[in-house]
Length: 351
Image (tube, rainbow, N blue to C red; front, top):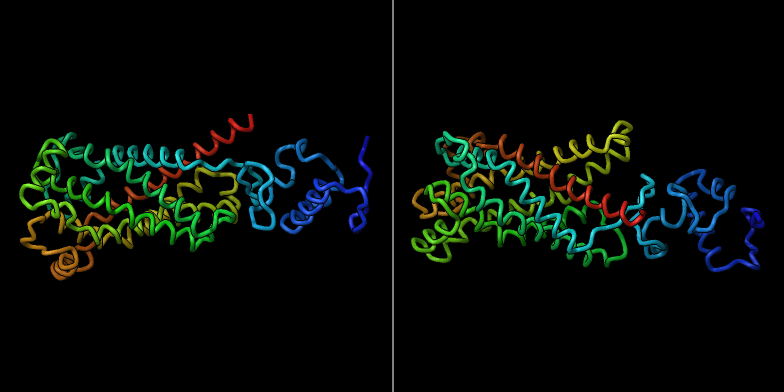
């Protein structure tokens, strides 16, 4: 039997159930967000559990204090999608796999950047281009996982866990997560650079050589410049790149139906901005970590001034093209692995 109809402007509902009142509230809010949705909902009343995918209902409403989610799905009113969020463990796994994969695939770009920055000759063999890949890739997975996990933890503190972060909050939270990850990343970079320079065959041998010559404190050389670099880098891939993609898919007609293209452009925007802002700091850090004894560069700050004095702004951006390409690729790989995982999880849940 078709349910009894009540005029839209009526406020008298003597037999309304709590669920009916919620539906009325949902339709009212949906009408404000998507014009015409209220008329559609009134014309085809349905129980919430029977509503077909894509119909405007409570599961399609934003998550706020006044309107908490009524289904387990993370909703997007603009795109009409219902997507399950990843758990902390799943984010850790995505970060670990994505970080390891992008570093392994792009190791020649890392080697090219290091050689250009430290004025070393280029490798003459394929193996030479991949020298140090174990030292770089093995720790980078956990480092990326830490960045994603810390980002999520800080985000929950900032938002209280009951609303989405604003765009400035997304960028700020990501910067904090990147700064924390420098505790791991700075020693890793040092080992990669020194393994390249000394020509040693393993990270363990490189660490032993560093500690023997410079003590345990030598492992933290270049730490503060790494903090600056990683704060901006993480803001790029956890903040700016997703924000750019969301803007493109929500405002540019072409990208609304071309998600892959939006991801490529968003990652390129985030990677390029991050590279331009951080490359001078990365150059000074690389010089300081390459000269671990401090013979020419006492510290990264001094290295920044000396490199600029000797070669101008161009010298500060030595290896910049290789690093920009690497960052754009890293942002694309990590974010698309995460998106694919969310889609897979959502599809399984809906099945």
